[in-house]
Amino acid sequence: MNQAQLESFVGYLKKENWAVFGPSKLATGKSESVEISPYLAAHGKVSKEQPPVFIGHLDQPGDLILDQRLPFYSFKKFFFPEKETLFDYRNNLLAEQDHRHKVALVGVNLLDLKAINLYDQVFEKDKYYQARRRNIFIIGHAIVPEIEDNIFEYKYEEEVLEHLPFDVFLATSTANNFKVFTGSIKGQRVLEAFGHADYEHIQYSGAVKEKDKDKRMEEIEKSLVNRHNQKTWYELGKRCLECGKCTLICPTCFCFRIDDIPTAKNCGQRQRCWDSCFFREFSEVAGGHKFLKSPAERIHFWYYHKFVRIPEEFDFIGCVGCRRCAKVCPVDIDIFEVLKEIENS
Amino acid sequence: MHNSYHSESAKITAISWQTNNVKLFRFEFERKVFGHSLKIKPGQFMELSLPGFGEAPFAPCNATGSGCIELCIRSTGRLTEKLHAMKIGDKVGLRGPYGNGWPVVADNKLPLAKQNLLIIVGGLGFVPLRTLILGKEKFLGKESKVQIFYGARSPDDMLFRHEYGTWKKQNIEVVLTIDKESTNWRGNIGLVTSLFDKVVLNENSTAFLCGPPVMYRSVLEKLLERKFEEDEIFLSLERRMHCGIGVCQHCAVGPYYTCKHGPIFSWTQLKNIPSAI
Image 1: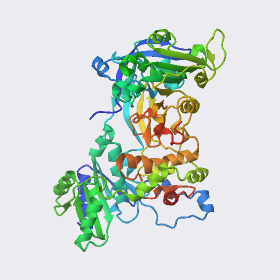
Image 2 (image 1 turned 135 degrees about the horizontal axis):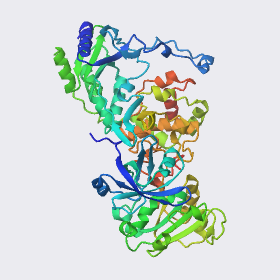
Image 3 (image 1 turned 45 degrees about the horizontal axis):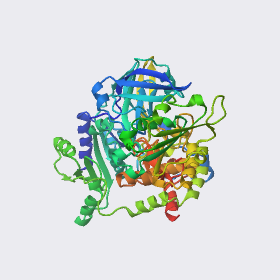
Image 4 (image 1 turned 60 degrees about the vertical axis):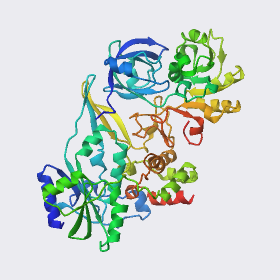
């Protein structure tokens, strides 16, 4: 598939009533230009990276940008919106909300695809998630080295693609040429209907590669469980401002709260919205007692979720390695450095 | 697909005062079939929903298998204040039951040799144990001897106080203590731990604890002193909960979710987790 064909595929999806989103030139708002905190400015930590790309609605197929940049925000909100209505209520009656929009996501990078593995597990039994998920069409994308020898291609399929959830995947080695894979029956159907038959199918075989358990994951987990690193949390707790930016931008953070929001007298909505374990009231119970008492305890809770609870529940690590949290942290807490410290403790 | 957040409509059929800010509510489900098929183990909890006021977890405290639910609730926040203002015939939503419940002989979670029980409770912590006490024979066996150490602020704050007489006839010893001196009180005064020096403990007892976090450390100390094994001490944890089904993360304690793996944990499970109690 070449660039022109890809653009016509995007056009086809739009014609078929898919709302198509992808990394694009159109930043979703000017206010999203990245601010530098006083802390970072004082420490001379000003980013010299390329301007960020944002995920936006593709008004024109040509708006799509497929390069190596990770979008500033992940694709999380398409799977798990920041706020959603579970029920409408009137007096004492709850009426379930229905979510049905066809959404196609183009150019989902490998890291954000990994996060979808997590959502699929976490919200396995969630009616709202499943209704939304059924109506999402995922087109993954990655730039891979020149696919010349077959062994590399075989390994890439076996090691990487078989373990990622997508409907269609575009692997590119040169700018104008995509090798096309499908990862679901839905993907095959849509491609065939569009008129593209030159693809290979990859059978999704679960988020985890069976043979080799992630050694590094086990090490970090062990270290966290055995509390080898109390000083780390104390130091981080002193620095962390508990702004919650990392939890909002993290593709694998999915904590939520459920609140009843009144819209009129005796009417309203029961909403589920993102929460953050960095917020003080996160662990507060009736009477005001808080079980996570200090910033150190709360930041430890965050790491414990990603590197102990998620691995225990799903057998994979709860961090995709995108480093978005480090990028938005106003006090320069870098997850890669923290992990190194945990491993060395 | 089943909606995990769906709650069943239930009507209030009885309300009685337990203390000056605690009421005991009885609910009957509008779908009678649902009520009768409901299997609740002692120590499990349900999410009560009041549209406009949200949801909160409460442990049923009545005898099992009756088709209705009794919840003992203190008026302390928006939802519970609203509930206290409600009348017989008003409706709420209930979903659940959730959680593991107390280990009992009937489920093979407690060995017959350890069927004696030492229950140590403070304040509202008594609530999730009433189901177990009311079904003592069924859950623990006829021979089991139960001792209850119950600490409350004052005699008027004691829950279920009109029932102690009946319980005593069934091999259940109720030992009470209050925080501060009070007129007409002839029982013990002091923390619940002070009872350890005044009462002879039954042999072969497992310990069940439920109370405010401050109570746990001191009681644990006493129990370990008295040679209770760490896996013979069970605690019911209180946590903020939103989903009740192990997803929202609010109730996580180390590797566990209080709503799903708990709320009852053995001390072996918790002892190495900072801020568990």
